Amino acid sequence: MEDSMFKKDEVGFAPEQLPPPGVKRPMCWCGDECCFQISDDWDSYGQRNWMCRNYSYSLEKPKPVPKGRKGKAKIPVKEPKIPPPICDFVEWIDKEMSEFDKRLIKSWRERQEEREERQRQRATKEKGERERREEMELSELARLNREKEERAEDRSRKLARAQRAKDAGSEAARKGKYPRCTQ
Image (cartoon, rainbow, N blue to C red; front, side):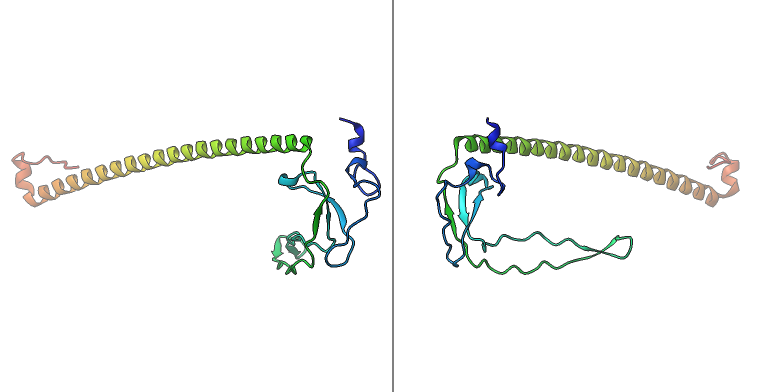
């Protein structure tokens, strides 16, 4: 690669990116001169075009304004209504992407796919871990509930035995029918 590719001229573009000398700026449908742009979209990356100055993009979302001295409470700000574009004139200078840009976009897409695959794998792994944790928590709750029920059954059995012993009276205890200590 040449270093001249990264040198910028006075308008912010490298000399080889500018339209050929002698090319006049076209007039758009609304009567203004068009401005020169280079596409950032993946489908037309690096392609040069003429675009109307009045072509409207969605503005940045306004940020909430801090309220008070500490700035903790925020007042929501309504998005301004964007009028429809006056003119949507676009004329392409380059009809196809360069081979370099095609390879660049291909590598970007491959990296994007790899990143998405890693995210899917991470999400699947996290889901499996979360399900395993939930299953362990449920089995622990079930074990605790069983133990609680067993203690409640044991207690009710002992209470019933004590009640039968009380009902039988002291004679049954003397005959050895019930132990003296029922607990």
